[in-house]
Length: 188
Image (cartoon, rainbow, N blue to C red; front, side):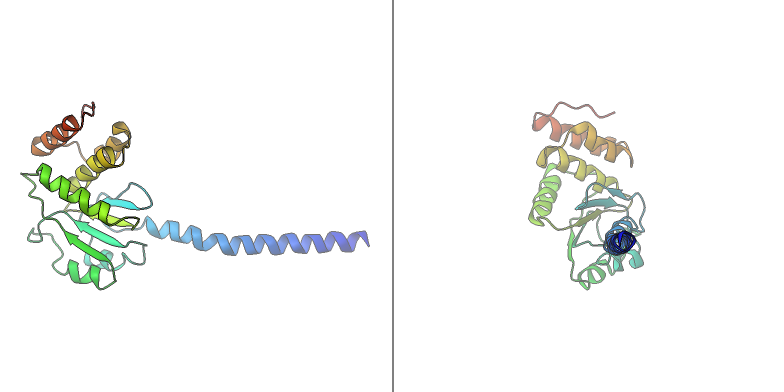
């Protein structure tokens, strides 16, 4: 009788373990898929926010499968490595597509403010913010994290500096925005 109870308990345990694995694998698989965006300089800021350089047309076509709901493209659509059909590829999956063409050599506070308003407007959607090589995107997301979300500048800067150290007009824009918002942080 004791052996039958032990065997029955062991069957329940095995069934529970199998069920737990069946439930856990899809979650784990989704987590792995979310990190497979094929693009240069991919930086996953959070489950909701990712920055990168220009994804290929094939990578753009996989965004819905990767869990994205929206794309903000910060380079002019006329740059040489732009994917000409990007708006069609993205919206064809039911995703939101926004092109905010920021001139690389002349980013402005107005550009950043427009970006922040757009990102805020997307609410809880999972968003890919990209440009050509993730210089515009990483810079604007740094500012957004610090100014809009209240993230610690040093923590936000780690993601930015994993892509580049802003210089020229980008450094000036970031320093001015931080100073205007009374945030004491020195870029390295």
